[in-house]
View 1 (cartoon, protein in one colour):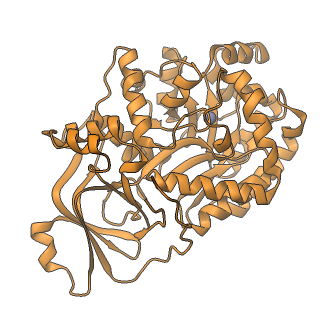
View 2 (cartoon, rainbow, N blue to C red):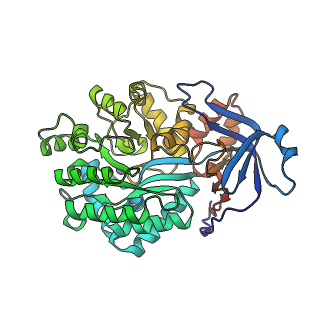
View 3 (cartoon, rainbow, N blue to C red):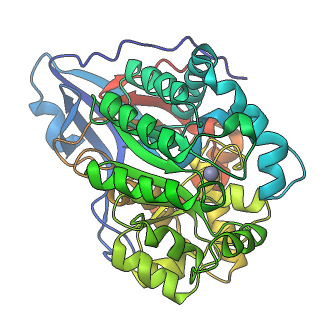
Length: 445
Ligand SMILES: [Zn+2]
């Protein structure tokens, strides 16, 4: 059993050098393109100073040469790697996780929209954001692209809670002005004004980034999509996040609403939303032209396997996306997704690939959840690896967290096999510690 410790709110970055000893790994590139992309030190030390990585060395070379006042944390027998990046998740849907028996459109109406109605209240949003962020940290996720609700207050609550924890987080107010309940509806004009004010208030403040967030084409008028594109033009560096090509009924509806469109992606493209820094959740039912356009634009396909299986949406094709050269990130999509754990998410991504007659190996999966995710977001100069100067958001994974994980991982002959065992058998219990800017988050086991 696990107990939840109170959140630690003080993420000050201690002065002086700290060293973390253990089995260290990170990626320096895409393992499908570079067979040497994985850096792996069986017994290494990660050096952290002022909240940033200041080096990685084999322990045999580095341990003797540390400055005498260096604090060394000994994690020998455990893995140390960069924190996970979840590229698509809804914090207001925490309480609708595991809601039974619907596909996308009914699931939104029956569960999600009623739950989101409560987020006009800042106190409710603050409580939910705090629980949500603790849950991310407990699962080893240190950065996420997070949908709020239509209410600006929900964004203020989320960014306030993320800022208090010193986290690098992306979020935005959902824009939705039609085909949704009246109580969740904005207007094209109000969504533009509210989003612009939130960008002004939060984007680039500390470690926070704003994402212009039209929910999906079904629930936005053409005017609202046009203004979403305008927000991106007016605020360079701001992200965009939405949903696309998740469910067949949804796709048919989009074709009816936008009769001029050549495809679902074409709807967003008309308004300048298909571009670098744009995160497209799902991308399941795509044709070759869609993949070509994604690749040419640099827009990101976000693979949400637990959600796609839970809602019966379909099977994402990672090989096809990768072969087309489209950036791909991995995500939980809670509450359509069924777990906050990126390990569980990798597990399901493997099975989705299997169902499509493909293979996703462990290096692919861990790359997507760390450096790959950071690259697609354009923040790999800040997080995602242990290159010197990166922010020291990292996790310690315990292969002995459960009897079965310990027994099976003891038989692993290679690091690839060990990681595969971890993604198939691991979950939040395997996350022994999560560090934010070099400081351990107060999430107890
Ligand atoms: Zn979603």
